[in-house]
Length: 583
Image (cartoon, rainbow, N blue to C red; front, top):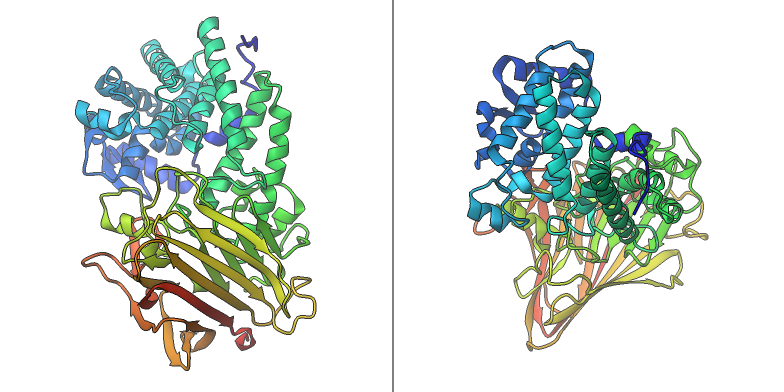
């Protein structure tokens, strides 16, 4: 058994990274709303009336709002007030809320699955794997910063709730497995051991410590591909889980794990993808469940401190120019290309062809994104939410919301019974001006196989891919679909354009216009006769033609649809950007 002393984790400052803490005027304003109206206010979820704890059982709230409540994430606005002592009742209120939650649900654990919760009449988020971990993290931090000022009643009640929660998270039945939720569960237990009730008996402490080490090692080693990319298909979660790796390594070192040093090498390998995947404007590409937002420099540099990454995250204000403009990650299934590190309006292209985890996966296999002069040329619908009963969520996860080929008028499912079925190859680029050439292959459906070859060309560049390039870029996309059963099938090739993008017909294709700027041309050649159409802002019978700049909010966008029917599909689409129009 592990023999780490009771205070072994108390010196691991990195554990503070898993606590959500908000400070400043806006946080105090939201707390003031609690004090005046007993409302829990959130920028993401609006005003939620506490109702003496009735909010926890309000099934009309969105899933993310229920997670916010059951995870006690609202305490993120309270910690500064509690620590300062500016509001003498804040600590009592927080403790009473924890006790009220415990009175309602503490002895009603229904089982590890949502179906168990439904059958028992318990809100699904009360014992959701991630929400439960967040609750332990947030309340453990409350104990750490204010336990000495709690009344004995509050201290004893919170200590009991924390220990029962930690023991539940440590069970095999409740464990979320090898994914980011499982990581949060293990780090929640570590946070409890560091900050929680120090009177926990030695046998229980050793049991929890051994569980943390065993599961954390396994989870962190399986979280990234051999080329250093997080397996959960969403670039945003690469940064989230890399930060958990930053936290996990010193936790394992403090608990005596002999493999902690190996994990530091894994962390080093993840920085290359992080450097390249950020777009020239500093935002993340909206793949999977990633939101297309700019993350703060402070939050990102908690994880990575290399000079190449610092250049990428600051758009060249600090750091050192990376030596390569494109990067291929063959195990993960990514190509990321840009025309320059010096130009914030540089060309950017990403192709993803990998299905390594069910978590946060969408039917966006062989997804392609292109931007030029800070304008999305080939865009994505993005992330809408998690409630699969919502038609807009189902649309966002489907092939119809991505730059994809739909076969037979039916999207592939978001997830399959098992991962895999999507392959990536790095091909030789030998033609004039060719920078890189890759192939993605989608074999997830039994009735057909779709492959997409992407070639990135810098016309007229004698040294393609080297130095900075400020000319137009040509993207050649070769789509092939072979059928394994039906003699013929319907095909739809879908290209998502940014809101406000206007199409103008031209021989063999269309021009893409942003206001009066000529952004790009799209031309195509196909072995089938193709019908050319567009979709925008359709709600019935199924959503089509929407973009989600923020979760839960939608804007009409335009989708260029090329459709035809035949025994196979052979389509070459050429996308040429128009850099010469730059002022």
